[in-house]
Length: 92
Image (cartoon, rainbow, N blue to C red; front, side):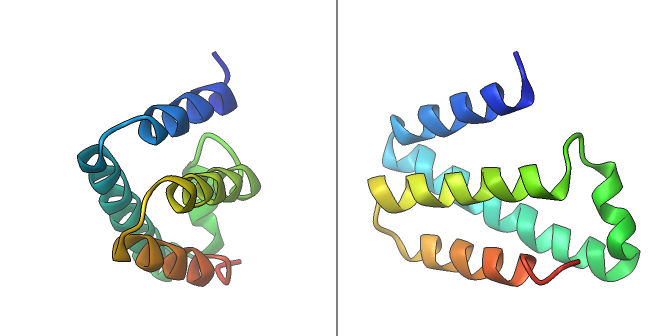
């Protein structure tokens, strides 16, 4: 299974999951983005080399997850996640 297929499967499993599953997922996504931003402050652009896929694919995935959350769930954590994604876009 390709990386993209795995990510689509993940998104669909969260989409069809309970509110609890969505809460855990968005909390994990927020934590991961916060950690990414801290690591970027230390490592700079070199950080992107540790991922299995490039920055473009990672951003695609994060945006698809955000879209799924907005379509299926209402919670303040979604706004926090979206705000962090906007800040992450500034990392070059």
